[in-house]
Length: 267
Ligand code: 1HE
Image (cartoon, rainbow, N blue to C red):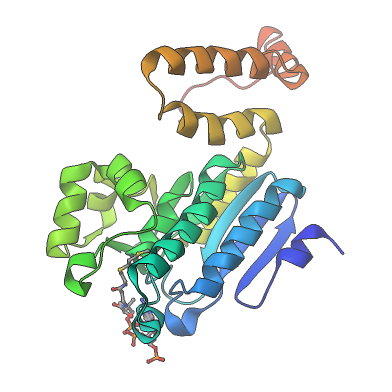
């Protein structure tokens, strides 16, 4: 049985075709709210995929909404104490850190609600693609809760702390071009679906040498946490390894002998 078939489940399906893994949140009837089970499945899938033949991942969702965040009903019904919820948050961090740091590029195909923990999940991907239905919110203030899945790190990094604080205090919703302009997403599609765009980006990325993709999708996250003196050393070290790989020599030969595409806008 292929590794991705073992990772696939009813709630979180995994398919790998042509080195592109599509991971789909499949809890549309609950707006893909993240309960304990779903977070454990994310942990298993993103722990397992780097060992598969996938070169890039598209994170998609069934239904009209990407994710409504923390399963508020489960949280209410379990009536957790502080230590229990801290353990829940650590499980989210384990899963989302695997996404950000494992070296497998992840593109989130967003639609509808990308809310609370749903935005934390999207922020753990490397590229976010929105469509016209996509909206982003952090309604934690209105629900009487606080972010616990890394938003204070990743969402603040994307949009800055002042905007994040405003979103959490006031429930402000961002969508469309405004969401793009402040950095919540890197692509906004007009008529096509975010999934089609994400898959087309995945095709492009899958053609890069895997070592380059590995470095790009893990080293930048690691390096951005380092003081500049250590960051510049780490960057030099990684470039030493990546820029001398055999695959780079082939691509550089293409540039030197003028068969490779030039880097300029297409008319
Ligand atoms: C849920 C959840 C959920 C829906 N937990 N069950 N997140 C929020 O504050 C967002 C809460 N959800 C909503 O505001 C709305 O559901 C939506 C705008 C996303 C979609 O609205 P709608 O009208 O399409 O659906 P609905 O009727 O509200 O929900 C359909 C079902 O999904 C319903 O269950 P049912 O059994 O009654 O059919 C809802 O209960 C269920 N559902 N969202 C549980 N979030 C680590 S800390 C992170 C902190 C946070 O994430 S705070 C933000 C939480």
